[in-house]
Amino acid sequence: MTAGGPAPGRDETPEHRADRNWDELMQELRVMQTGTQILTGFLLAVAFQPRFSELDEVQRTLYVALVVGAATATVLALAPVGLHRLLFQKHRKPELVHVANRLVKADLVVIGAITVGVTALILDVALNRTAAVAAAIIGVIIVIVLWVALPLKLKGDPPDQDARDG
Image 1 (cartoon, helix red, strand yellow):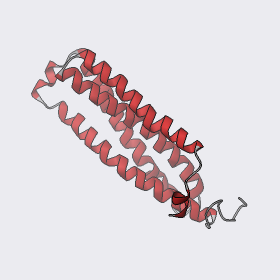
Image 2 (image 1 turned 180 degrees about the vertical axis):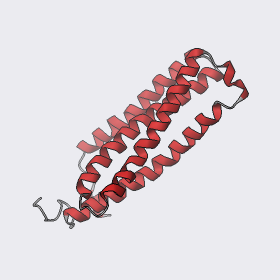
Image 3 (image 1 turned 30 degrees about the horizontal axis):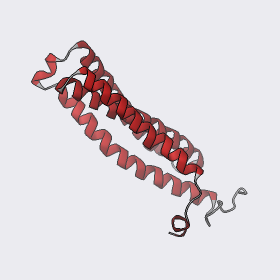
């Protein structure tokens, strides 16, 4: 692609491509934000439940780590918006998209860890530690398969004609 020329496979300028990529990132963040808010709300409510005092040291440590993780996920999800505000109308959209893409990927890692951790905490309290560890291992495998292995496989596959046409 030449500077100022259309991007490969699309009839768009680099500026239009950056705008499109930014819009796609913001849509992904909207989806992620909903799940993060639900998990964070659940975690914050747990501390105010009567049975919270019955958690053992491992459960409390996991709980605190999950709350910190939820706060981190929230900050990571909001960071691209803050960057956009600071760089608004400075003609830095391609750089902004690059940084926001990395932040979204980091946020996915944190959200995956929180999701697995919350599942483990619930099963540890409701059932036992063995069930919690088993669920955590299965959860990590599922996250790796769906969020890492599958995208890497699809990245290597050529796109089908229907996807390119519509």
